[in-house]
Image 1 (cartoon, rainbow, N blue to C red):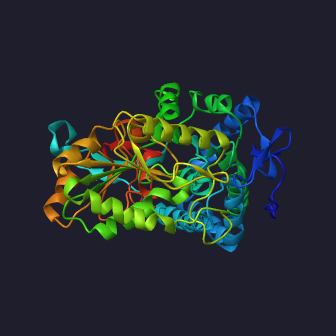
Image 2: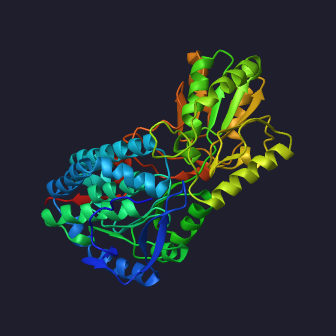
Image 3: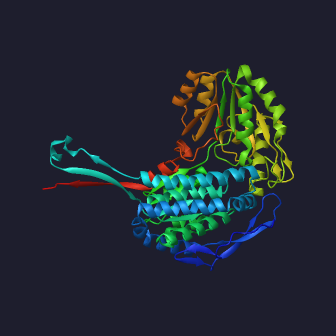
Length: 483
């Protein structure tokens, strides 16, 4: 695939300039395996150099005025807006997601930078009534929020521009320099983003080291997260890797946005047409490579047959093909390894007793939109994160059983409940052990200003500019005896 690549210096943005002393690796268009570009590949040495430069920038970045930080964020948002169409083409090329999904990613990215700029004005502290205790009589107390220090941001391949933005923008808003490590398969949009940030920083008197990018493998990430001088690590990716990062980085703060196997519950009184539509919209966007896409569907027995029939009637609407075509809704996964793993999980579920009601095979290089019924709870396609265009359906006797089944998972990011009962909706909100409960909408709903994150093995900490900024600052208490 041939595209017009963004205009930025060669190499990696490390220290005050761009380092061209790197290796290179091809970035591949998942649809046909063609080479999009050769991207720079960093090493542990580059990571260490970036750490030194980032640590040296901690005080200068913390000293930036609120106005300067807001201006940098606003400038980046404006430049991204000017290049929105080119960004869509770039994301299609490096991630293989469909045009509609990449357009949504760009739109959400623009909103994230705008929201982060607005939050700069809301970063403040409070007075504390110290004289509530006798020892505090005559004292004045207040606290402020201070930057946590150098932030390491590690992003996944599925939403490379948006995830990098959720690392970089809140860090800048908080007054922290950040080193971003994109996924090896999708570095191009992050490199362009860093270029825009560094140009905006220069215009407003900030050091270019406010953002650096280091690419490479696991050894590069390990060098970044294990340095005891960093302030925090913000990671989006698989649960196993995230848990290892938390161990490696301790006791530094870790914000972990990890995997899940998002559940959608269909109550006996649900609007079945809306629930079916939610599975079609929420189970296959991003080619199924989204941590809050519909994976598990728990349907109350009285409506199971009708629900499955309605889904079968409509699933053919999902066009499989070239992600560049605006009509395409499902395209190939990020690489062959992911494709073969998903197919193996489908086969294993079938061998364990599940029925393949639709799909289950390859169409070209893409896994067809797949519906499995009666999947055992022990099958990987049910209990782990499949990260592909596959939904698994099980019958449950009633809502009680459905909520209990959702909670039996080791994951807890988002879950959805379709019901006409306000009482059932609030029961789900109260009882489901997840970071977000979505009623009568897809579990993949996310506003970029809401607190977003999981519980259990799905992570810790919260994203969304306001909440990420709080995570990337620490309170500093001031106590004054005025005389």
